[in-house]
Amino acid sequence: GSKVVIGPTELPAAQHIAKLSGSTRPPVLALADNFSGGPGVYAVRLSEADSAAAGAAAIAAKGAKKFVLLVAAGSDAGAVEKRVANGLSIYGAALAVTLPYSPADGGAKAVADMGSLVDAPDAVIVASGDTSPSPVLAALKSKGIPGKTVSLIGTDRWLEHRIDPSFEGAYIATLDQSETGPIADRFNATFHYPADVNVAYAYDMVALSAGVVSAVGPNGFSKQVLENASGFRGSTGLFRFRADGSSQRTMPFYRIEKGALKLVAKSTAGF
Image 1: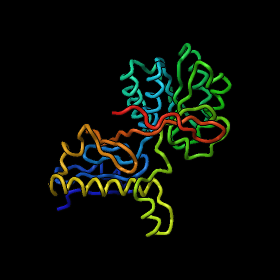
Image 2: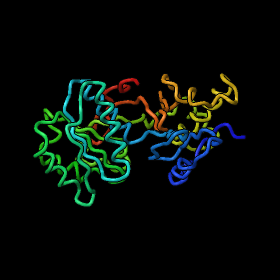
Image 3: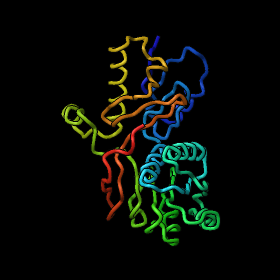
Image 4: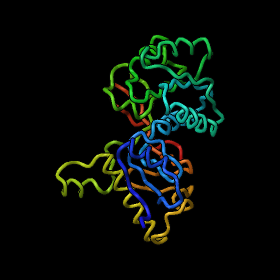
């Protein structure tokens, strides 16, 4: 009799639920990190694919046309490439080449191959997955990237690692880590520690569910409602769900300067 499920927070559990068949399963608002989603199982958290796509689109909006994607080889590489290509197409830009790389060699071969495959790219995107981007960035730095004519675009996954000098000058679209909307003070008063982005994601899904019931009723969790193009606004910003279970978010756009994120734009382009 469940109308909607909020969670799980564990990636293997979310992946397992996405594989279950049957029309009786209610919609699932999955809170697992790095989950790509599935039909009726919606990925709530910001994905590396969306972070990369939003960053690339923000640079394309300024006139860049030719992009290179360096992506850590693995199951997520295809999803990252697809999202980035779609995001660029809106601005008449395109991926000149996608180069999956093995973290084992630090991306050195992919960076070397890039030089022979692409002449004068406007920007290079590095989607490093679970591993630190530093080895790839060092290889790019030896080629003069970033430079006056070539921008470097990172993803939110970079920020899981220590920001070292190789990150300098890169652009990243990610959530405002300090912004948890109206809940932060109430949460801290109740639980005696600061709210973080995990709290904000969970809060937003409870608020969304309550809002659907209030507006449409307990049977209102349909694809039409959950996948509406206008999306929803929460403490983590404006977001919407796609038919494939992935999510899309607007988010601030930053440049890494002197080891810190410096705000470039309050939000990347809308949907």
